[in-house]
Length: 180
Image (cartoon, rainbow, N blue to C red; front, side, top):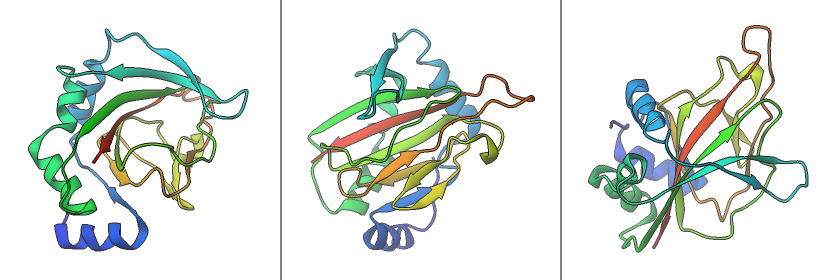
């Protein structure tokens, strides 16, 4: 795990309530975390709009993805960004998006802060799948991350589009929601 100058990140987070962390983990680490979810059963999720859905997998203690979010360096980063807090609860999941799938604009109802890590993305932003936070569009590649206050700022993703080069596009993110 690596990230930029902490005072700069704190300043950015304080100003915009989110911070983009390109290359938080290496692509091979993202691939390992993705592979570790292979045995978890997905469930179909709907968010507000009738035809908007995607698959999620819940992660629990001892899942590598869950343990990733409990890493002391990440806990220190979260505490540096949101203030000296005690993290009481952690919820984790993966979200899998295929062709035509996305999350509509919304604010979450629960949690203090979320850390979203891209495990798999499409080849180019022209295929969609960007994360839009407070009007800022971020195209995340495997290993890129975003920390944001999902209850305070509106966010969504753009739909994925199939192409001749990638007829079955897929975007997979790992999400940790911290409660203080």
